[in-house]
Amino acid sequence: MPFKTPLGGQELPPDKDALKPEEAELLQKIAAKVVRWQMTVPAILFLESVKPLNWIGSQAMVFFEPFVSAIFNVTEYNTFRGMMERRENVERLLQKIEELDAVQMEKEWEIKKAKKAEKKNKHPGFLRRIMGRKKSSDKIPPKNKSN
Image (cartoon, rainbow, N blue to C red; front, top):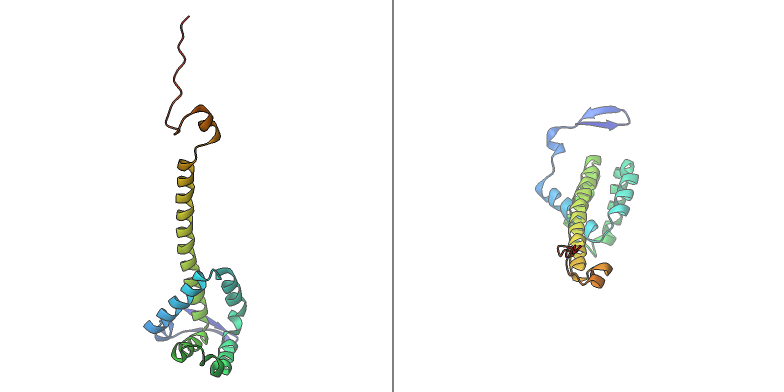
């Protein structure tokens, strides 16, 4: 996969392109939290805007490590900091967030669809109530022609 640098394109070695299992698990965990907190759009906007500054951001994470270590797990924090030094991992995180958000949106869509169908069956329409019909499958009896 070509990787653009200020001095031109270069090929990444295949061993650096793959994620370690703990890195993949950490990306999954972070993306799941972002989607669970319904912060998908702000997270994508932030990550896309700071993608060119990923190395500077990882160095800022080094600066804030003493403050963060009092609250968070230090090994996961260091793993995440190391991952964010590589630009392709920012893109991987974005893709994982978008993937989990699509799954979440599909689940919400199915729940809304089920609730709407339940509401429709529970409360018949205005005309059905007036005419005394319970379901749309009930038919109006035909008129008798006695001429």
